[in-house]
Length: 336
Image (tube, rainbow, N blue to C red; front, side, top):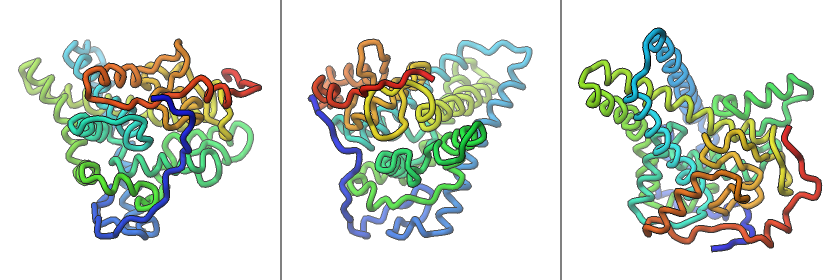
């Protein structure tokens, strides 16, 4: 399905308070959640743990690995978990739940939601609400994670990079889900997946531990599987995703006029599964395809295209040549 352009701003409508799902960090959702100091403190603590534990895992892995060759079991399971859960973020949290750039059957929706939750980047409601607000206010002062507006010079760039990459999560206030994600609140499956977010995170750590333990046939395999397929995988995965917020709003090519500083960064295209064609995405947020040129690698779109042949996915929304021509930047900003 070809679409010219779809506004990034979601429809702002109210939904009944009796929906009553829990918030991403516990407690009932309310229309005043963004002013709830308890929810704010809890969310920031969860964010801090989410950032710190994988980093600690990398340090432990380095210590354990020192002088010892890592086995094929750990590498294989870690790579498989990276691909499966990253697809939950790129195809699921981002292109499906947030932007509705395609349709899919119920089982595939659950895979995307659960796998994305295993990436430990927050529940669907949190992720989608934050990202929708980012599109509404991209690179202005209300953008939750813009690297701009932090002063000039090298210091300003470094402060902006830190804020966009990690800092925003540690100072973030809960979003108004009723305004930003009313469509998702009406979806019982999404509410349930968000409600059990921490269970999915633990499952994402347990699966690689059990898998490597069974392959190696010992308890040491359980430990190394947890370390490499769990914590190290999370660390790499998280920083790739966060680089879209930081790196891809600072450095890269600007092929389309978007009114913000979003950039296409080819260096991140493979590890991000196509998410780093970020200027393309900001120009056409409803498109399921981010790599708009033949050479722009977009493994997420390739996966969705293959899934459409099986019937799991349908109505893949893409961008017409005419729409691209209308938004092509007349003074293209190059890499830098």
